[in-house]
Amino acid sequence: MQNLNAMISLVPKMAPDDYVGFTFFIGAMAMMAASAFFFFTMNDFDRKWKTSILVSGLITFIAAVHYWYMRDYWFVNVESPTFFRYVDWILTVPLMCVEFYLILKIAGAKPKLLWKLIVLSVIMLITGYAGEAIDPENAQIWGLVSGIAYFAIVYEIWLGGAAKLAKAAGGSVLKAHKMLCWFVLVGWAIYPIGYMAGTPGWYEGIFGGLNIDVLYNIADAINKIGFGLVIYTLAVRQTEAEQLSA
Ligand SMILES: *C/C=C(C)/C=C/C=C(C)/C=C/C1=C(C)CCCC1(C)C
Image (cartoon, rainbow, N blue to C red; front, top):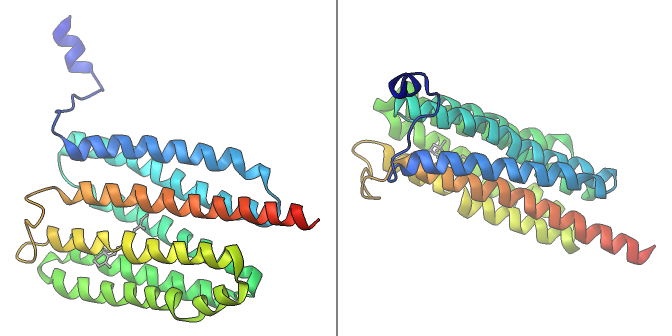
């Protein structure tokens, strides 16, 4: 009976030092909790902010579903779920670009800004996927192209058109924009570092053999949930300000 149970068991064991499995599991839970928070609180705000918070919830929700898949994939195959990882990113990173656009709309952001950021992020991710999964022999070249697209995003939001709009908006919009800019500059930088550490012959082993999925998982939790909380805080501030002036 015991053996039969083990045979049909759908819940695999997890080794206490399986940090990849652990961070996939806790990542899934954190993303689910964050999604519930954003979905339930979005109705406290008026239309303008509701959409932004809805997008925050969609980002963490899409990630939660992918994390559940990746957790299973890792348990069964003990190999990086690179494909699902990139499917997740290609859906959620453009949504993060939407967040920039939505908060800057007050200052007159045009759809052109949104498309610019989305196209750059898609180039960044497709070339990154090519280097990691399709053509790892040329990981350096793919990584370089991906890195250039990443820097173009950083430039646009810190110094380019998006930065000018944020300045024009001022107040808590400017503050929130700055916060998101820091997430992109520091939080997103974890990914290319992980990529380099995972590419043989590059900086392989700088983290003492730590699986890069652990880095990616930590970065995702910081970036996706953090981004959403910045938006949520902005919505709270703006709503308070509007109520005071009413
Ligand atoms: C929620 C997921 C996020 C915010 C993912 C962001 C991913 C990146 C910023 C990835 C960047 C990469 C490079 C800049 C070069 C090497 C390849 C990538 C794709 C890891």
